[in-house]
Image 1 (cartoon, helix red, strand yellow):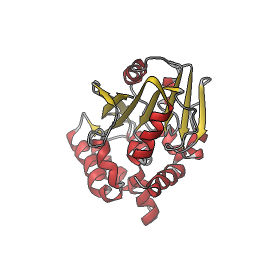
Image 2 (image 1 turned 90 degrees about the vertical axis):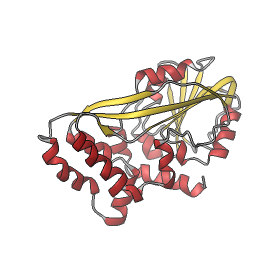
Image 3 (image 1 turned 60 degrees about the vertical axis):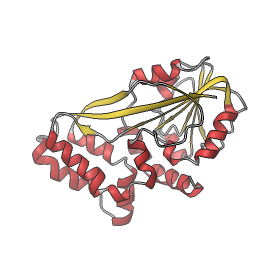
Image 4 (image 1 turned 135 degrees about the vertical axis):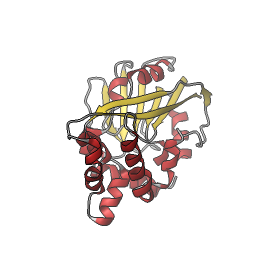
Length: 255
């Protein structure tokens, strides 16, 4: 990926850093336990493109230290703090980490933004012998308990906002399976994120999307406002809850 795309990633998520930190779902504890267990040692982990630390914080329960880096200082300003986490503003392709210091590298929902050739070279440089890299992504959210709401959400996501997603966004839905992954890959189980959300909670999450940020920048209006109005008759009272599910795919490999 060109460096311009990486800059676009930083700019988009810097502008909505507070909303991202407040509304993005955490990852399943079973996922964090699995990737931590793939490391031969648990001294240092590097959570790359940490955002607001959704993965770094639970990883810190398994490792002596976690280096959590992000290209956006504003994202780091909203990060979840922990006594064993060191937050660092750095590009994925130039971490500043010492050679062969890291036992586990993680990338959650961000690999499609990177210059992957340069990032993979950086991973090989920083991983210790026996170290592993784990990357994961979650697919489009689905409303699991209401087919009409689910159809409305999918139409808004892939239809109305379809042209505003970055070109590599399809790689996320495919679980990064189409991406080169030049490591000795291991089998990984499937996971899912599940939440019982109100309409305002779902809308807050949708306002953290990069596609929404692009639409707002181009048109000056928030497209999620229209979605909320459209689904109100289907959803019912704002306090009513529906089950939102995201499939999570993990790829793990060693050097």
